[in-house]
Length: 366
Ligand code: F0G
Image (spheres, rainbow, N blue to C red):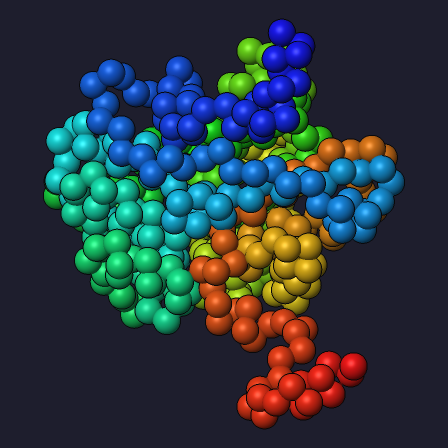
């Protein structure tokens, strides 16, 4: 047996045991699905938990910082986890159309999964505040897109009213199946580490994801008799309704994904904070961009909203206990927002260069 395992390791078989079937199939005993549920999946989930040497060193004190890189989901964000559930259940219930308000990622995921399942996706987005990659996805995946002269909060208000009056399924995070799907990210972290981290650092917009992680940790750790993490939620300073406990009328931030002034999951988020003895804090756009650059220099390109979790961690450097294990959630892929990267980088980028070997050798300093 030992010899067989050694051979398998050499051949790489043990490292890629089985084709990943998608998160509903993988975790179905924890999810509200039955044999009758038509599973609409793009094999989402199973994203890497990457140890960050640069952040571990930056925090110091024998801390280990891991990144849950959920930007590697099929549509490039954690929304796929919730959407595989929400669309599968909408189909099971005989719905023919779904709708959402979105700062971009939800619309991309809703469009992809709805189209795959044969349902019609409608999306409302705030005009001028959706990153290019996300818009391109919604266009390509077959959504009908309505761009409003208003912000995300207004769009959500409209789709909530619409879906309560017409047979269109709402797939924002007020849909309980979204939270069910998203909780699997917590399962994966525990599966990978064998325990929960001391801190989970996560960006917050509508606060669906922090609610989902907490639910996931509670469910998974209870049966394993393991310790729960402290939940650290971060928002942008110009868009921090949960930190300040107010409604922000005109939220502003470079992190357009979390440009939300009135989160629908406010009460649930407050409960998470209390139960986990966690904290909600804000980070400035400058701190977000700083973290965004640190991550990219280690080969991990996330979108600005995701970097808020790392900016928040760095802000708390002096509060972190020796030997802590920390997970920062990177919710979306950097490719979603190319404009932000092109405007905010320290690259050496020389343009209009004469294409001669001599010239380029000289430029490189050889
Ligand atoms: N990170 C990214 C990349 C997001 O797209 C979002 C939310 C969040 C974090 C915050 O998650 O709302 O569960 O607290 N994006 C939504 C959207 C609002 O429409 O794509 P949350």
